[in-house]
Image (cartoon, rainbow, N blue to C red; front, side, top):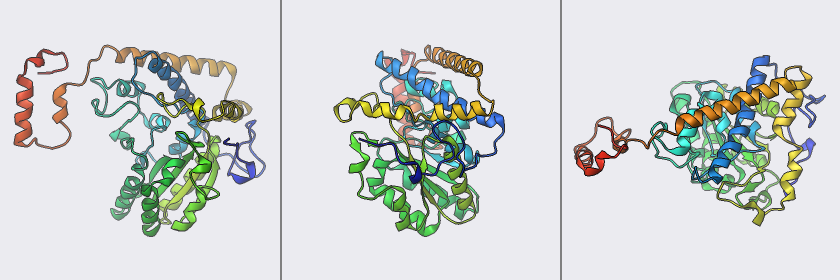
Length: 370
């Protein structure tokens, strides 16, 4: 059983009813920014619900939801637009905040002609170069040393860029995590390690993942601060991320943030959690929903009303429908695109292969462009 952590163990701003705790202070944000945070969290929830239904109907091959973890995605709101994001496969909200469109998102799931990565990745493995959202990879933990490398490269180049890397608690058992933490600590790389501890690494509970009292405590061995934060408190997430970014830009090195949250759904559309966890466990976490907690805070600030919420959800629902409808007539990426994006100038042997392929009878297929 993955229990809801004790309040005293975590950095928090809001209680479950959306009140600012006496010992805390809410970030001083414009109302528009508060609204944008709420909108993006609701967007993640709603598109997850819609896309999972499509997967169950056999229209999508694979999908992963973020239900209950949406607040952790919003950490990037505390960063600059040119900072680097190295996601795991459960942070679409981080891309939406930066400007990834719904149509791009859905086209990637289908791998069609307008998929930004041209059908070269499996669904939900997004890559968005223009917003510094680096390609998601399935192998666990590979993104962690990559983020450290980019952060250190920026430091060497005299830039003020910061890299944030997301990973689950399961990834802390990989060699990549420890190598990256050690390198970042020694070289003071401007990297933010954000462990989204959602209780389960597929079917392995957190209690069997490590003998340490927490993930955050591991930071001490690598010479950096380790912070445990309530991962369902979006304002606390923003605060600790901003503090970590300020430290990094000041040359003080990396920070490990352990965001305690919960994976209320299955690991993926291919997973059946009923075979390894108590079905009552997710229900206990419903009362700690990050969207509901933030909604209560906004209601107290007179930013949210029932009518505003109704209009917001109708607008998002319409936008998802429109983007999905626009994605449907699109065919697959042109087959010749398999030769693109590797070399600036194709070497002779690949030019020959491309020319041979384009001469085949199959070029009559609508997948081939002349």
